[in-house]
Image (cartoon, rainbow, N blue to C red; front, top):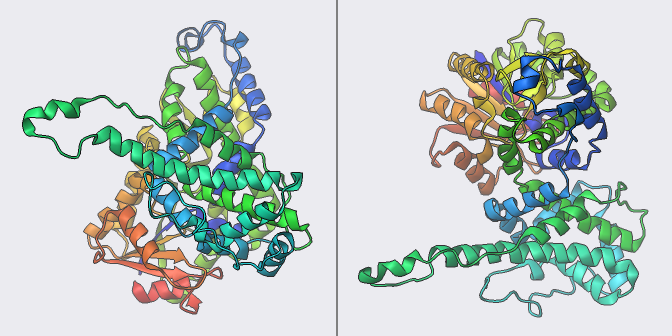
Amino acid sequence: MKVGLFFGAGAEVDYGMPLGGRFALEIFRQDATPDKALLEAQLAAVDPRSIYANTWLPEKYFQQSLWKFGKREFSALVESTIEHRRRDLLDFLGSFDRRAARVLAGSQLSRERFQQAVEELSGYKFGQRRYGNVVELNDALSDDVSLFSSEYFSAFLSVLEAVDDGRARPLQRLVLAFVQLLVAVHGHRLVDSLSHQLFTRAPDELSFLQDTPNMFRLELSEVGKSSLELVLDAPSFRVSDVSTNIEVVTGFARELLTELIASCLDYRKLIDEYFHYLFSPRAHWAKFTRIATFLLTVRRYIAEQVAPNEARIAEGPGYYHDLGRFADHGLELAAVGTSNYNTFITDILARELGEHPDVHHLNGGLADFYDPYLNKLVALDSPDDLTRTERLLVPFMLTQSGTKPLTSVEMSERYVDLHRGFCDCDVVAVVGYGFNVDDSHINAIFRSLVERQTPLVVFEFCANGDLDAERDRRIRQGLRFERNAPVHLQPVDAERMCGGRPWYERLSELA
């Protein structure tokens, strides 16, 4: 049975790799100084007498300042999130207790210790006080807000009500950030409604009344700045059972805000808005160097994640090591694609399978570098090779951008070759991939396969082993399929077990 496989970020959690939103936040936390130095070294290697330097780069480029993204650009991401990911934000805030319990379960802090801290600080047992009847959002914004009735958010409020000294100031800022995001989301919806439908009724003869300009605007920059600052500037320590009471409550509130930002952050705008400046350094030098430095930072951060996890990567266990068991169940690996950037998947496949199909990195990878002057991909073994090239190259590792498949012939060929490989398979399985709307260019491959009647099996991580209706809806929505589409959704736990058996055994049954 010929099998095609596609791996997303979730497939590499066992190997110590970070997931999407957290990955982005960690990149924003990085000090870009070494990346600016590398870009400066690249510029020094360019021959200033070449046609390239005299026509494509700005005059006296070697004397120009180099720039990097800062908090102003990053705070704009929260504005974009409020505008484009409103539903995700509301889902999180509307199911605050469920989200909080999930974050708490995955932290070094026990539920009992958190509840103890709340009780000792506030004088009330956890869950004893709720604020839904005493704190309400203005009806003009929304009449359906459950945040203040949640156990966990009420616990934060009860601590703030009892502790009024300087110790509680960080917690107060965090709670206010949640409230600001809540108000911003509902306020943006109200402003958007007023701007696009100021009149609910008007005679056809007076249709000109609808031609009023957009007179309403919600200022979101401060909301974005304050929320992201609280997350990016957070102390490096993680709260645990041995932390003080106020550290426990404040640290957990910060973890929740981090989870909210990470799960909803719309960072596609940053990439899409700046990527095209790679093609015009002469006209937009500051923006060119910002995106170039950012891509160098992305690559360096990902490469640095490999070193502390080398043992786990080499020995497993993990999804890539499981591929060595495929033959025992009548499965032949025929085509492999991934949205991840690491190259260790190839090393593991070589050890586990010997001969194996090429791995198609659809989002680029550590070995991929991009020449914006010629619009082509270049393979380099090391970033040190960047200082020995004739032109400026940048890592090709785009995070969340619809421009990914359109930037070069080589990338387009990867998509086509993988699709053809999948079409020759008897079944295609997807592991650890989220089917986000920002990845519609990858989702289109899977949609095409189903339309061609190629069975598609999606292994979705579910801590409790159950695939809830919301996950089912999200996946099918990403694929643009109705509920009855022939897609096999299979819940898999942290041990890569599906219904008590290894995921590859379940795949062999469905193939």
